[in-house]
Image (cartoon, each protein chain N blue to C red):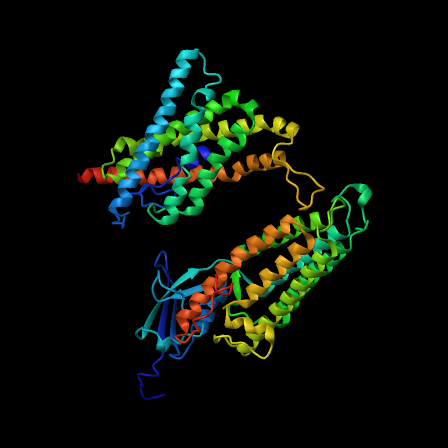
Length: 315
Length: 252
């Protein structure tokens, strides 16, 4: 270290505010192989209110955020690097958001199922529906959200750690609101069971179960694509599990199965709010699927051409 | 919201909406092609003419009747026709000949159409209310200015007076329109409840219920967060646009 070696000279990093260009921080003696993540940690020392998750550092004030894994000496900067900082706002972890938004519907639906006081007339407090399908619907709805909670805890591998805090309010309003709206009608004393009776319920249940298994299979397949702790992205392919063969036709079969589950639930309960919830969810998932499909196409030259984003051959 | 969101639009060659358009016109934007421009000019001229017809109709009816009550009936048809015609503006945004947000434009036009059809037309008893005149006047003046603003902008010859009017008169017209709208909805409430209008109750085979009376109350409540936001956005736009023009005039 006595001999000056240009590839190992320590660097200087100055961090400016992207909007005001004010100099926020000057770091000297930074290792050239330091990652952006490490620089973020150094920045937090001088500005503790901006923890790393809410920092966006970029080379250009209006440019894209640098990734945590990016290495200082690989960036197009001189010995003094100028980085621009933007505050992403308060952040919350994806896991926290998922757990909160899924625990709500699980709990809320049960309040209606057990006909807790002040929802329906007092003469119905804590009574039970005489329709089998209402009990079945409660089992299906609860199973769905328990599955989601367990997947959040044990299956999913998130590429981002955090999202903006305001998302939790938006997301919870959506999930909790719709859950209450659906549960109100399904568990209502004046609920009308499906027109085609047990046949309709059996068919709907079959669709629901198949799609739940399918959705879970896809989640497992996606998990196995990505080793623990890594952020690598690979093209998903069908595995031995027949439910994953849908990958031949769509990029996001997890969304396909999810829509299928809710269609099944709508047929089972013959409840318009459930159908509307399915429609809204389908719209959102289509937007996500198209985005994911586009990034797959951009990232992988050899992406299978037969695949559509969410509905085979159509969408 | 319906009254002034129509006023709360940005400027721009094709008639941009609030927050979407470039205020000063100094940025060279790729406008709509010549065919689209011709179509838009015709559209905006027709709409300006339509709202002028409504304005003239109001004045004539007032002079003929000698009072300002129940003037709605004399302009009912052109009002319905030209306000509903504004749905085309959603299409214009969707196909990209107008640089505005489809979502924002839809919201604005739908709220107007809702008031015309789902409240005033549907609840006949409110048609003789003075509150109807309040929002009709507000809308009429606003739309005449707005459509002529777009027409002139498309022809690249915008008189300062029109720009000034567009970004100033809303200060009075917006609250006036909102008041008219809210009072009209409020007046409709008892009749909606009595007739069970547009409402469905349990039990039914789709396990759904809808209480239009409660829905209208919710609409009224929604004005509380929406109105101030749009109003102050327009005030902000006004400062930006009218002060910019003053600077530009210095260089002419």
